[in-house]
Image (cartoon, rainbow, N blue to C red; front, side, top):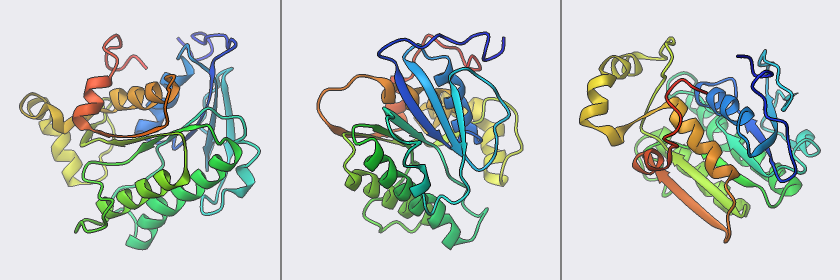
Length: 242
């Protein structure tokens, strides 16, 4: 069934979501799930290249320079929540670029979104070990922690910081490095022995969307470790159904 065939006609009260990083693994699942979510009325995907899909709820906006998101102010107006999955793997780019992508792009996007949609919720794909103190020996942990601090300081009424451990790709893909190839191979055993150290990519995506569209009362920031993410994943959807 195509996206268009399974679409739900928007009704009053549905949420308007924006997603960054929909061309990536988790972002792709999040987009697909949100497009068929009864509480979502529209999805705006912002990225550097076209996704190659069509859906009546979907609007695509191309943006090349995430170091300056000022041009997105109008696009980001009237949004209820953001799903931010933009990122890259450690070792795939130089350290300075890793920091720019992880920290600067996140904080700059948040700045414009907060100005355009001050009541929006922000669902952020961070990572296990993210260190807001900046003392970690791991650059990835320091940078994710710095990005988290920037999101908290931005003043959004609701910020959800997702810290998954190993993200299982569910669908076969070319793994980015040896560590991921090894983890993918041992996942069936690892999942049984260490369930709180793994999360399927589609389950993580569902959780990021669901907390963003959920009605909330008081303003809050939630740090969701791998165990927490597993606890809130909807059980009604089998893997691969998004």
